[in-house]
Image (spheres, rainbow, N blue to C red):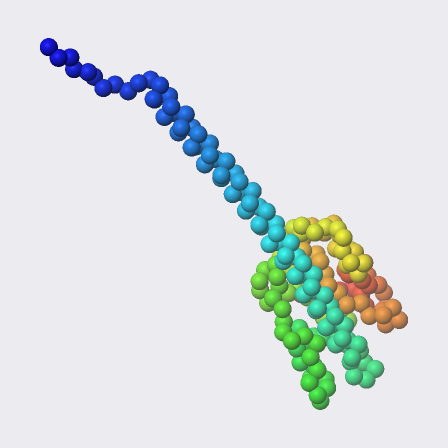
Length: 185
């Protein structure tokens, strides 16, 4: 007589399979956490780059507004009425350019900027329209010391302030003194 052997799984092989399954699940969970952390690092790195570019672009606008104002023909100094005035100054017979192009806002990737208005409704400065909280909150150049502790990059205002003898009343709250109480557009 022959005996038939039943094929039954051994208890130890079931336990081994369970530990392998738990090990694979643990590995997937650890990889997910690592990828999430990497994503946060890359996001912060990208935002730091955008903030650095915003500081550069904002300063370019501030300088261009200053050149437009200081190079006003005659004794009547005035600010540009539109950002496009910085591309082609029609107050001169020869071509005068203070910017080559209207920069995109690095934070929103759009050409729209918040405008800070001054005397005669002229543009004395720009700011981003992004409500994003900045990563950089300290260590700004002296002319932008008031950027420290701001809650959004929209509060970083790049304002041209003429020399003190041309200023009626300096106003706090923007980068440097302003010729008059600014209005936002």
